[in-house]
Length: 72
Image 1: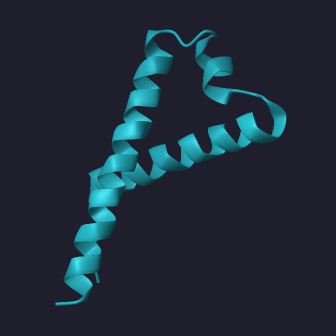
Image 2 (image 1 turned 180 degrees about the vertical axis):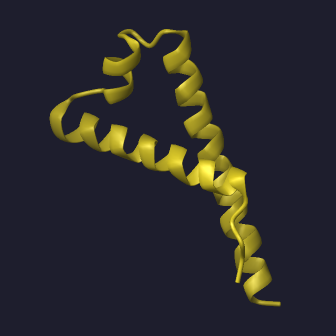
């Protein structure tokens, strides 16, 4: 079984935050990140969006690497 590292856990948390934000935008036209850090997206909000994107890319890598290990 694969043991999750700190970066794995942080990536999952960031992607969940991003998914919840997109769900709120789609359902209620409410941007949670924008509401917390200000609209339009200021510097901190933009950093959070970038981190969510990087976490998503990392989780693609994580998924592919664990998938390869499962078949060995």
